[in-house]
Structure formats: C-alpha cells, structure tokens
Image 1 (cartoon, rainbow, N blue to C red):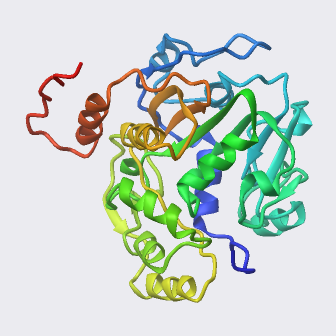
Image 2: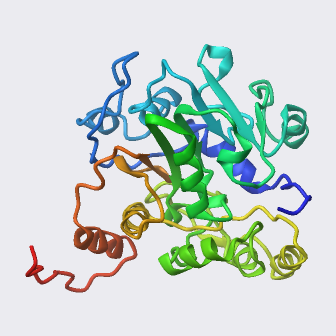
Length: 340
C-alpha cells in the first residue's frame, strides 16, 4: 500500500452514524439461515428466530439490539477482534469484553481524526495498526470471533479480506459483518458489484483503490433529504454530493498511488449472499454463510464461518431474490435442473 494513510472523510462520519442506531429508522425483515451455535454467555435479546421485537418497535433499533444481532453466533467468552471500530467500538474493552482492535490508525491518530467531528471518549487503544497487507500476516493472534461493521465495502480486495479473516479465526470461530444496503445510502445510483470484478481485482493484486473506482464513488454519490443513509420509505429528494471536479481530483490521487477511502464494493443483501456462495464454489474463499438478517434501516447482517452450512436458498433462488432487489419485475421462474 502507498505510505499515505487513509484520510478522514465523510465516510468515516457515515460509519459513525451507522454505529449510532438511534438515528436509523429500521424496516423490520425476516432472518434466515441461522443454523449454528448461539453464544453461551447470555440468551439472545433480539436475534432469535422470531423477529417480533423489531415488529413491535419498528421505529427504533437500540444499540444493545444491534450488538446482540451482530454477536448472536459469537462466543463472547473467547477472544475477539474488532476491525475498524473507529470512535465507537461495538464491544468496548472498557465494558469487560476480551477483544482486541485493528485499525489503520493508532489511538492518537483516531483522536485527531475525529476531533470536532464525533465524540472521542470511547476511542480505545489500538492493538494492531494495519498497513494494508495481508490481515493474517499483520495480526499474529487468532480469535474466536471477528467483527467488522461497515468495513468490507471499503476493502481494496474482497477475496483477500475474506481469506485473511478466515485465517484469523480459530476452529468454530465466526466473522460477523454489518454491510450497507446500497439502496438506502449514498451509493443509491451505483451499479452493484459484479463477480467478475471481484475475481479480477484479486488476481491483479491491487493494494490501493483504482482511479476508476474512486471516481465512481464520488461522482455518483447522493444524499436523500440531506442524509447520507436512510431507511426504506424515507421522504425527501436526492441531491448529488459533489461537483465533478472533486471526483476527478480524487481519481488523480488514486492514479498517483495514494490510498483514497472509497466504497469499493456495492451490495444488496441477497446479491452479497450470492457472491459469497459463488466465491466458495470457485474455491476462492473458505467461509460459508452461517446466519443472515435482511436490511434494518440502511444495513444488513451476515455471519460467516468455515463450519457454516451455507445459504438455505438455492443458487437459483438467490439469483431471483437478488434480481428483485435490483427492481427486475419480469417472470423469473427457473426451469427445474434435470440433474437434481
């Protein structure tokens, strides 16, 4: 990676917003594919097979509910790793959790980054300052769970990130992800990530975001009703976030080898599940889906593990679901596979 470290940006501010769920108005949806073990240290408070708690309070998801949703399958009595918690860790060390932190800044760098932008009193010591290399090489320890909230969409290489997380997990460990649904954030008018690009970036060995991905990120970025993320049905008109000179300038920075923080990957829930399933079938990643929760507010949740049973939906079903998320309304029935 370039020696230039990622700079503070509105993306970091958005990540902070999404870690403060009182600002999010969720659309409660069903959770599927939740096979696997439940954390042994306490009974789940929300992420059960019955989503009624969300239905009873559709206007609010509390920080505790979000935490429980992300850690339902994590053994919180073990050692955890949180990647990129920025100014608001999901499982603070100060609360007694046995967790370590990986970020691109040390604590002093994070304090400087968020000063005047976000409250900084929750920022904790960073155990592993990442330089952009292989996660398993930069982090010598192994963990019972890894948490990454609004991180995966920023990664330069999706495959390498998933491979690195898999290498960091002890047997039975899980990777828990919170991922923005592009329909309800500033990526609204971008095309979703294509599997071919995921594979090409992996084989290219890129270490910083490309000029094209940076330009697209800034050029197509919007706000709705003044917000960078919103819930389904939120009223308001769209407005472009930047004039074209900003994307061009940031693109030149990327072309010069600078790391420019970018939403490199764009997903909807079932589209992401399909990509993970296909990467597994191609032998590129070893992690499989263990649990899934559809979009709440502007984000969805996926738990992956080496022992995961995979999606409970067939590939054909995921194709249809992903197409419907893109607004495709044509007849999408598949002919039964004669091999089955």
